[in-house]
Length: 82
Image: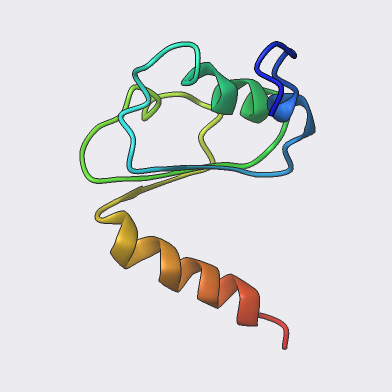
């Protein structure tokens, strides 16, 4: 990873998933918002409140333990349409 290059992730992301974070540490917390504001779906899974919970660009907010919610959601998405 080139730490001196500007962050290009938000401009290229097709989906943003924030897992187990309060999303309170800047500038990293801005990356999901930048991607969502340009149209990428934005999913937050966390136990407890986050700094982004009230942002209009959040597509889905799930309350709970990441290790209980995320694996089942990925499995469901991967097997859909088979």
